[in-house]
Length: 193
Ligand code: GTP
Ligand code: MG
Image (cartoon, rainbow, N blue to C red; front, side):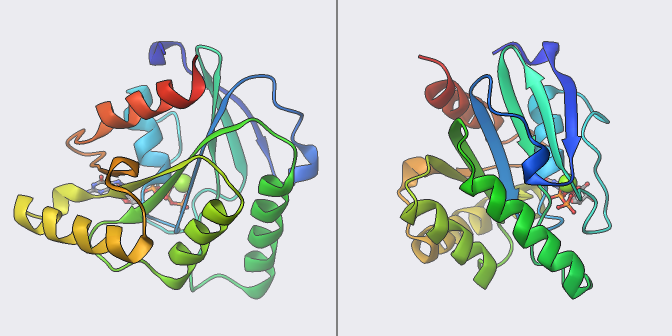
């Protein structure tokens, strides 16, 4: 996949507005502030293409990007405590309707912060993906914030808690680029034949 050809496609506030899939799709899910938008920028090697913020809740819509005939979907994050009930309900409906719809879900990239035990919502997300037969991989984010040995320990512990096989878990950093090649390989494996 030639990531230099990436461009923004569209932003949707409601799942019902999203047109049917026209190509393979990779979607990014995870807690607010976990680094979804950052890892996409790292993939695309384009700093400001996907909006990133240190304030959780930056991505409020479903944003589609395209690179070389593959769609990359940035989804709003869950579990942002400061959010109102109305906003949380809106998120639940948006994500729920998105994954309920008839689409080309080639790969779901589920992001979890490597520094912390998975939250209840992280566990629910993985459980949902597993139970509904989605192809998914887990990216542990922000590995640059831990030492090499801490990374190994946390990765093993989180993997056990999530119950995912080793080949479905990638330790990543959008700062250093750690794990990005493995992520790219997974995208190729699931999106191209
Ligand atoms: P929402 O859009 O709110 O759901 O958040 P998001 O998951 O898209 O997170 P985003 O990419 O906006 O990153 C949140 C914050 O974490 C920003 O301040 C990023 O700079 C920082 N961040 C993301 N990835 C990394 C990483 O790999 N290493 C470090 N050190 N910081 C990171
Ligand atoms: Mg975001």
